[in-house]
Image (cartoon, rainbow, N blue to C red; front, side, top):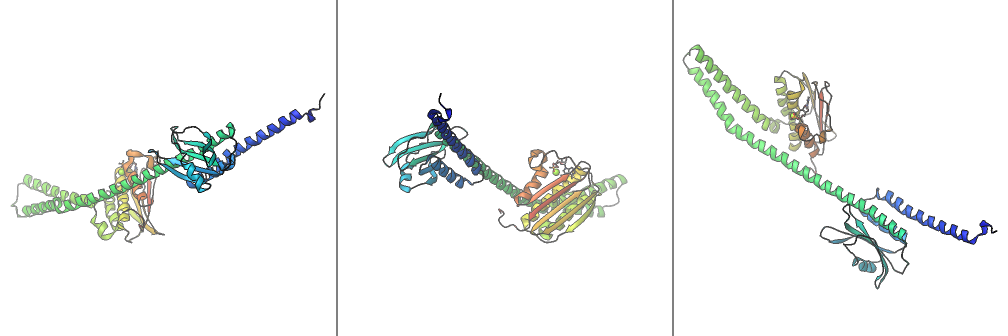
Length: 394
Ligand SMILES: Nc1ncnc2c1ncn2[C@@H]1O[C@H](COP(=O)(O)OP(=O)(O)O)[C@@H](O)[C@H]1O
Ligand SMILES: [Mg+2]
């Protein structure tokens, strides 16, 4: 009987198994290590690293990464090896390819070429990894080819994520730009309406009220009933004049242009005082700020005050306007009934346009907005924006 320790057949089998497990470990290392690396690299470095790893894995010395867009315009996005051979490789781009291909002698200076498609989520190729060698080598086995396809799939997933992310960022920028323009157009329109009202309807109403007062003064004593009617008409006319002024002030407070944010917000707070709500200032920064900052913070305060009058049932409001480390911050706190916030501000959608607009105004200036509220616990608004506007779109 043969001793199994000295059986040449089983020694060979063990060696084969050992080699096989070594190759498996190498394939696994290729995929795991590259997978981990790709999460930390920017797209350029990602492409280059995959080329290097693929070349090292198959012991090939030339590689190109080709990518194309919808109109099949092929671009080289990464390369490795000597320029002459890469030039020949470039011609082997095949935008219709959807499975890995090993080619023997596709051109005189390329003994072997291996092409692996980069497949998108829709199954169509948007690029290819093309590898070549200066001297002829034997074709890799199926498992190696599959590993390379997995490597390409890994890269494709990362690149596609990056593309989607870029598209999202561009879209977000466009949206911000649109909202910014919308706010500007709204502000211009409000200004125009305020001037029109001031020069037209408000003047006419003030004139009407004056003439009525003059008429009432010159009028001979009237019977009680007619006298009471005249007083009602006078009161109505005066009310109209007051309402017209308030409308103009809300559309475009001249005090904001003439005296700055603090005075304008304080004037706006008169609406709270008139409603019997106590108003205190905790910090009063009188510094003039760039007009866009003043308008944004004024509109935030205005909506905050609207909300207190509409929803809070508060008896006390604390306001603050501060300037610290290049940041202007506004606070509007009330002791009203508060509300339960079910969702974060930016996902509230169309239901809460007032709060969403406050948030948008602050973030358009590169600032932050927060609204903290608890049922029966009052509401605290904070808006903090850079007090200078370098780099902000005009
Ligand atoms: N200061 C506040 N006190 C109580 N509830 C408030 C206050 N501010 C906002 N809210 C609540 O948040 C909701 C959203 O406010 P907002 O976005 O300004 O929309 P709107 O005022 O048009 O309802 C309000 O409907 C109200 O329920
Ligand atoms: Mg509101």
